[in-house]
Image (cartoon, rainbow, N blue to C red; front, side, top):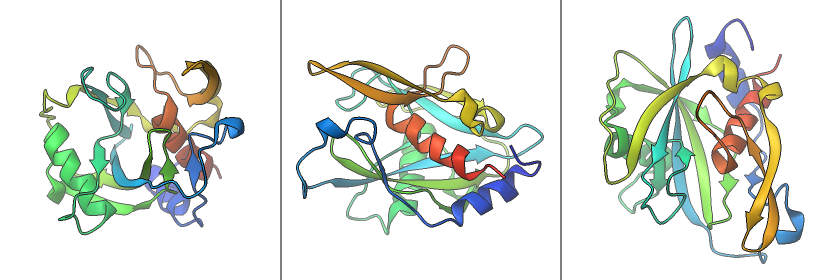
Length: 198
């Protein structure tokens, strides 16, 4: 990882975007061309400091999409949202109690298409000042943080697979301690890791 994580982040976000997809590792399962995708956004919220950290959540098990999985705060765009940044900040406030005024937006990562039909824009921002999470129990089971140094190392990522709807589906995973970070969240974070390399 670069010595200056914020400098590495700015460089990573300055590169031309190339969209990613849950289907990148599963080309035979690619959906029909032109399917309607629902726009969504997530916040890659980073707490700077001697050991910078990325804020993640464990989603409530009863949620319809990705229940019980580890995720970045976020959700679908509402009509009132001015764009992905507004949606990511609104969702982060609703899900984990993050004050939008404490977030410095640095930029976007490439859009990611999920198998569940969302076109997700990852919005990267620095969280300034103290932050005490207040999780919404209807959506979030837990809020925790993972060192950016761990997530910025491509060597910590691996490709795994499991049966889904009767077929073997491959996906990225980046475990950390007791947390199994996988799927779209791991893929988004791996793009960040790749781009932060010198």
